[in-house]
Image (cartoon, rainbow, N blue to C red):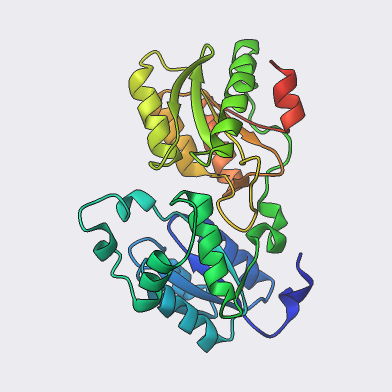
Length: 291
């Protein structure tokens, strides 16, 4: 845990959608750590208002507002968690206007150099922009290391030998897709690729795999990128992932140990056991050895 977490300055949280920001906020409140949250409107859970020391809303294009709010609350360190679907904003008619960008966002979007609009490039550029105002991004797991999943088979059901081969096959592909900053997940059946995650996110990729594999029984592999920056976009799974996998007809979820956030661990594993699914957390060496 960070040595600075006990200072009187609140830690900032830039919150997108999903359960993870709420789980993180609850963990910090239990430790007595003041947390100032800026929730992305239409994405963040309103429950954060009742957990945080301070709470504000901002539009997805309100970078200048977020920076001003951080300064107002005395935030010099900030964590970002939660889903913000890039496809909802960047690839639609009048895309930039849909963000309702403020002046700071416009200056950043058109005036700062970045090689592309991939997740890594965008986030590193945003981190650099906040740093211009003395606000430093930190990793959520530096404050809550218990969010990371440990190695092992987490469910009662273990993968079969054939599923282990698919895990090893999918692991290599997922790592390569991550290296290219495309996505973190692939779906595989009998060493055939069914779906590769891109801008749509893991859940939609799983549903697409189910549409293409009506027989079901496929394996989903979700791993960290080889160049993973722990300050953002750590692979995350939870109850919704299990529900989606079951509804799509999948059988196994393989994730990377010590590199993946498991949200609501007990509820997630209990649901997987109820559905008869397998959840296994592997380190790279173990996954490759199964090939």
